[in-house]
Image (cartoon, rainbow, N blue to C red; front, side, top):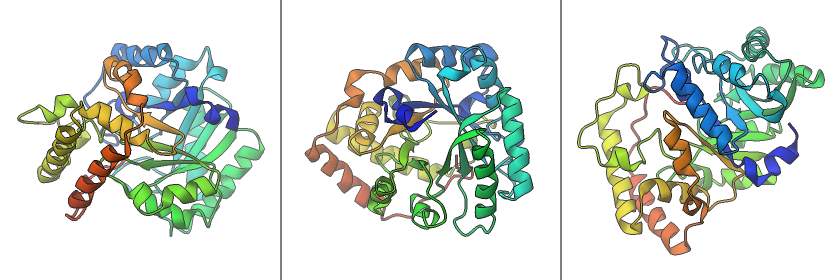
Length: 318
């Protein structure tokens, strides 16, 4: 992979594979999917010309499934994985040995000799091991085992500190109709100043900003679903404010959510899927039409009201 790939608008959509990894004690994602359904989703991604995939060792078996799927056309796709987290219940580990072990396991899972993008997984900006981790990754990069070093952000504002430690070329951040921290704290502006590529995740907020979810009268998540542990009052807040936005803009919430993110200067979006229809629905042309300023202002007003209340955080953050 080179920068030309990320500059190509055809690569605007990246498929996140957290939902494809299955359930284990170390990994909670969504409902358990059969291997047959996982490959149906991956086939649909290729059918829609998605050639960019994001994963992590902590995403269950996703690396192995994806590695098996792409083995005959590895050179035609871009793989982004992560180091630093191997178990959501354990503290992150960016020590030299841990980073080396994690990266070598990623190569083994994919049965490949290089990874296009390796990201530090939601690092605490004050973690003293960050520079040690980067030192290890730079050596792998020098040996052409890594093309690009990036970072995923636990909080968008973490970038303001992390950028002083290293010039990351690829950044992931949460960004959606009810999470404006990427733009509220001028983080996006700094990322663009640094000539880094920025991809937005949680565009549909873990499936909550969907017509299916907003129309449900009750929601009971399976114990294998990471949302099972979420605070229901927070879910209701998301749901009620998303409905306000939907009623004001008079459109499906998915369409509004995609158009909102696509209205800003980002390089792409990372989507998840538990069925192939989730991918095909994204590629409706109207999802890529920017919102009008008047529509954005309506969303900003609701977000201002929403953000005055304290966020009740879920236990698992991707």
